[in-house]
Length: 77
Image: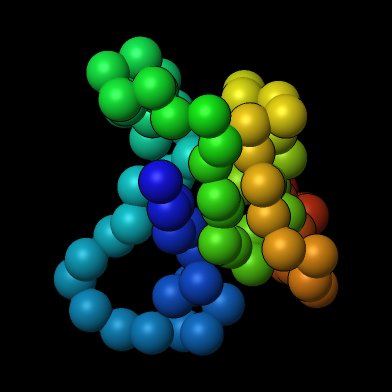
């Protein structure tokens, strides 16, 4: 399973499509794990918050490449 998050935000892409957040996708991912028996989730994202959320939600199942990421929540209260 591949999950794409906020790369379009960092790239300042335009358009009327909005990607689902990790929090919004979690219930569906849980369903897919149960239905299809996935053992790993490969997360391709530049969003540090999405990676943290997925690791907290799915633990060792979450796999991601080591790369520089952006913490979008910095400065948000």
